[in-house]
Image (cartoon, rainbow, N blue to C red; front, side, top):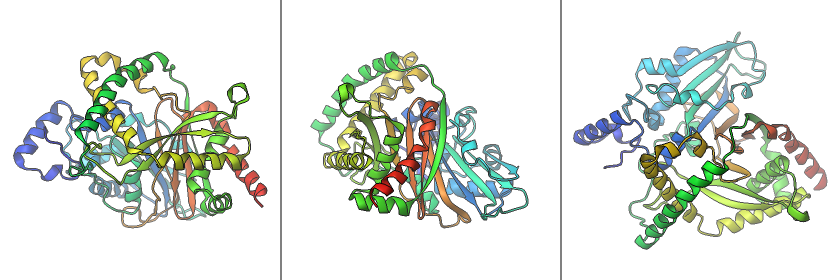
Length: 427
């Protein structure tokens, strides 16, 4: 049937809307793309949080959420009783927003960071929540009156949406594949064949190799962009490569086999500007694999990372994502035939990756939606069992936002120690 986009669904022809309404009445996620379906079933969540000069109350927060939904109409999708593209009624805004009063902001935002699975619990509520903590007595010494968090199913939001919304710009997706830039039929068939052969292997490996749930934890870190810019310049590498290297060196030891340097299996994301008709209609992002060869010398390791990223991106990075898209389609089909196989155990499978790294576009706060908000900006994601780090650059700061097995958390402070060590080394 016709594909309905988040930004145009409310204005479709009446007959098409009637068909779509019947479809989503039976299955609220029926109009999700295959990528959206996978992230929804995996119960992946994402969050945005920042401080504000304003001391928010419930009414102000509900008004803010109304603006948010106008700029990101995809938030009206995917739940029982949804009317995609239409404003959320007051009773739903009331149900998904909350405000608490606090004496100070000690421990924020970390005390709020958790899987966020409550967005999936009540089928008749939107797949996102917004909350605020307002300081009694108004602003503190740093000018902070409130802290705000938006948490959503990852099926509805990605990093580029957060960056657009930070600028108070429209983040509606529409249909993001390019119908004019067509992938040759021979290549499409190749992707379909690979997916048909690989999906059952992937399913079997996931059910056999996936561990029992492990305790997960969250952590954030704020770094000054100027220091990172200076170090990357002295090393002659990209800031992104330096940040990747700092995180991986801190979290993992160089324990290779038989004395060989350890090879880390990583995946990172990048925005895709060359869209084709086989792309997902909702997500803009490409997932890219890159092996990082560790070295005890951080400067050498950072250059290894930079070289690996450059080599990877010199290839056709789109091919892997198109295969992944075909895999999602195959899994969605198989889940209808053998639904018992698609248990939480399957969706916990992380493919053996040491870490998933996400560099979101720069977050520049301005406009009505983020009026009064201030740096630093924190954004992150959650996937059960995976080590994730989301990098959020803004004007002055970049934040590192971790979700990972709690055994890794004590290693996070190593990052600042590594920066200090590298600064001395390069002085």
